[in-house]
Length: 455
Image (tube, rainbow, N blue to C red):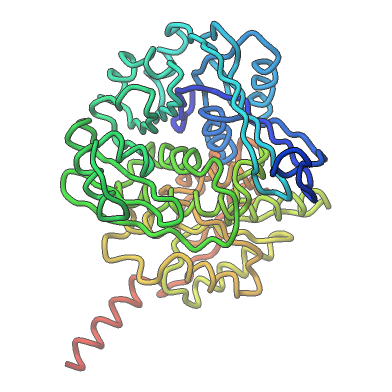
């Protein structure tokens, strides 16, 4: 089992989308007549959260309960295609289904098929997975899986980062969880308090933090972003503006990204900021309706992976490099040009702002990640940029699978964690010549010294 193994626990659903056109109303009722054009089945509930994390490049296992019926078989096939390992507790009753009717891409009706069903009890396989996970996500849809595994989850939360996405019909998050992620309606219900907006969400988060005895609570607010609280502070994270899109599955995208980041030991603020960006990009791209298991969710890494795929298909060589690239200087440019000369495209794996702060200190970066990415993309030698939130780019490299990873500096190849990753598919890590006297840290020191002398 790898050190970046995410275990998702929760209720798996089969989602069905029936899409068509609506050009007239029904003659016997004021409702649209949808002329069916396509049907598509997709994983839903905890199964969607697991598939999204797997598409991010994470190793994922899902502990769930599937019925012995056709929907259960279809859902199992979808999860296999998504590279999600399934530990099935067994469901005594039918697999739940949610059917959406869409007209011109917009939902007009949802039909839920949810007959009473009871999930099986924990197995030794489920217990072993939880003991060895790098992080855990409880994606509760109130159908009993989380409740049945609660004792194991309480034990795991004492040692392993655990994110709990709660449901009004399910149990409360276990004490010691690193983060609980209710949406606004759920938080108001759990907190038994009224109000609306960010101020009310902050109050709900602080109430639930104390009541649930968890390390952090984030209340997601849809297009307004999220509000979070821990023992020392509370803060709001606005969401990027999204025109149109489909919010279906946004909560699962938020929780799956947060749980993946929890394994890297990031702070609550960093976790929420990155999860909000991921959820917003997911909504803008069409939400769960547009997600295909096995295909990376939208974002810079997905664009880079698509470029790498096209280059490989035509027999070209994919080159990647990585770094912070704060205050781009001549040494950076020379290294990037040298890296590009090694193949047919160059993809830069760029440390996010949160990642740079962990590596360089709280006063870095000087330039935000979006601006650093824009400057890199403007260079003729750079074909794509993929921002990553971890300390090293192993996960994004797994998605891109370059032939060559180039690193500038006085490293030894054996010191690079990226070299071990590339070896899995026969890739190669190379060290490019170090440009003496060129570094961001030296530029900062020179700027400080000159500013001090001028005072």
